[in-house]
Every structure is written in structure tokens, then in C-alpha cells.
Image (cartoon, rainbow over all chains, first blue to last red; front, side, top):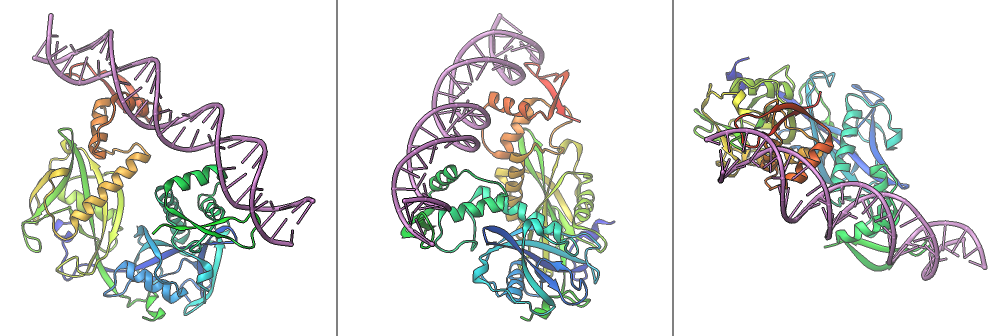
Length: 218
Length: 218
DNA sequence: GCAAAAGTGTTCGTTATACACCCATGC
DNA sequence: GCATGGGTGTATAACGAACACTTTTGC
């Protein structure tokens, strides 16, 4: 291969790009992943991360927003880029390079509806993920690792919880993401010294013990 | 935008993809970055990270290898994906999405030669980087953050050092990457308890103190 | 009133940091 | 032989892990 081949020209090789998004939600005290089942070929009846092509005039981030909105009505989510995948035979229709993202949402805020090309949309527990099409199991697994990584560095949980939440709920979320049990007292100590939460005067009703509600500062 | 637009079809929008690579080297006790200066438009006389287009039949990783080989003769490097950039007006010739990687090499092993389209290839200190074309200053900065991140998690320094090196050299490298001073005794303790280095019987000649040479295990 | 969950502090072990002297080599 | 850098250990502080009882609320 010649160096001259490496320069961008009007005739440079072009390929289709897609975005795929691992949407994490927190439901029944478990971290869930939202998958769609396609109703038509390719991948008829197979499960996939929601995703779609990047169109002309869109950045990847804009594409993710559009795709998520179209598939699930979800808008304005916290998104994080995970990785770019470029294996040659990923897609049966044509060469497609995809960029994987993750987003964090609160399932209650986003009733999911199966739309075009999709026969079913469903939240899956992470320990019960189906075999997905293409390399999407790999994408999902990489997305979870990235989420864990980010969680360790900063307190990010996007829309995973309600605006006001108890420390117990926050801890359950952490345990879910990290897939490990945490000591309650140590967890509370750590979170409090991060100084990112605001203690409201309210208590959560309908729960024994009368736990305090917190919200994110600012 | 309609959902039907999100599905991959033979006619889906396509765009040119490039790879850009932040090549880090360690020279005169400082971490350096290898940049190229273009000899022709676009970006005539401007500095850039070495990069080029992804061609048909190549993965991004293969493209990086080819581009690096063509520009610098560098082969078989440790490469790490940094991030994908898709802003609309990045490139003057056409829409181009790029994926940034970094690689770690030992400058002494790779004499650099300016080839096609390149008038100059030069190692720059990180604190003396020129203004680069497009968004390459951003790419370089993101690549360094990623390198730091990876360094904290595992002992990776690719080809940055010779096969056999002294602990002092390793420490200088760390200090260079992290841009902070480390305590000599604590550093040595930490590295040793990682148990990744093999102590050779050899000492480095020409250096006062007669420091021991180490190499990576296995 | 009793069962269930919330809230709270202390001890201990591990890890990270700070710090000073003797030894080997080059010149 | 002296100046430069290599090599080593210990004491202290910070951080993370383990652990039990009292208070509040729902039912």
C-alpha cells in the first residue's frame, strides 16, 4: 500500500457508520439493559442493542439521540462513548463501522414501544442477556466495563434514579452496576464525603425506617 | 427524521473514515509526541498527528498500522483506541470521521523520514506542542489522558524503553507521562511488588552508581 | 408491638507518603 | 578521592474493611 492512498481526497473510500447504544436502566433493584428484537431481515427475530445509521449532516452523538428517540422516545440522556468497532464482516448487508455508546435512563420515565423494524423492546437483567446478533454481546460487555470505570471516578448516574432518592436506593444502584455487595455504613460515609449530595428535609413515604431523601447538588 | 432512516441498506449514507495516531516516545528523559508537517494542501505547512484514511478491506487497526508504517517505518506497536470524532466541519475536503489511537515507541529504533505529503517529521515535547490543524490538539490531549489512565491500571510502556532498562529510567518515564515527581524509594517498592519485572545480573555501564538492569517478565 | 429498614462510630489492617544514610561507579 | 547517582527501611498518615446497636416507620 502506498502512502498516497492515505490522504483524504474527494474520491476516498467511504463506508456506512452506525451507532449502537447500551441503554442501562435500574428497575426492581437491578441494573437492566434495553434490547430490541428486529421484526425483519437482516437479523429477523434476533436481539440487538438499539442502534442505527449515522446520516449525512449528523455527528455520531446526534445520531445516537435520534436513534434513541425514534426507538424509545428517550431524549436528552447522558451518553458516553464506549468504543469503535470496525471488523470487516460485521454486517451482512454491507461494510459497517459502528460506534458504541451507553446511556443511563429511568425506565419509569420512558415507556418503551416497539416501532418500525422492531417487534419487541425489553429490559433484560445483565445476568440473563440473550445471545445477540453481530457483535452486540461484546458491545454490551464493553459498555458495562466503561460504565463501571466511570462510576469509580465520578458520581454519574444520569437518569437512573428519581430526582430525589434515598441512600439505600443509591447503594442498590451501585451494587447493581458493580455487581458486588457494599457495606452500608462505609458506602454512606464515602458518598457523604464526596459532598455531591444535598440532604432534603423530606422522608420517603411508604418505607419502613423513614429514610431521608437526597438529591444531587446544584 | 424517520426510523426507517436508521436501518442499514445498500444505499445508506457513507463517509470517509480516517485514523490518527498520537505516537509517544521517550527521549532525553522526556515524553515526546511525533508530529508531521504537511507539504501540500490541505493543511500545507501545518502540523498534524500522523494519520490517513481507512481503505476498503481494512479495519481501523490495520489502517493505523499501515499509516504508521508508511509515515515512519514503525511496525507492530502497541496501540490503544482513544476516541472517535465526528464533528461535521472537521475537514475541508469532505466530511471525515476519525478515530484516534495512541502508540508507544522508542525513537532510537525508528529513524523518522519525511515521505509523501510530508515535509518534516519531528518529536515535540509535550509542553511545546505547536498549534495543529483540525482538532488534532484535542486528539493529542485526549490521547495523553488515556495513556495516563492506562498507565495507572497496568504497567504498559510498549516500546518506550529498551528491552533492558534501569529502574531510574522507568521512573523518569512515569514522571514524564504523569507529569509529576515521584519518590524514588516508594516508586521502586511499588514497581517491585507488582512483580512484573525480572532483575537481570547486568549493570548499566557508563552510569555512576552502576544501576541494575531489569526487563519485563516472560 | 413487632418486624423491617434507616441511621450512626470505632477499631483494625492495608496502603501511600515522607524522609536519610550508605554504597558503587565514573571521572 | 570525590562527586554523582544507585540502592535500601522505617515511621506516620490516609484510606478502606469489618462490625453492632439504637431509632423510625409500616403494618
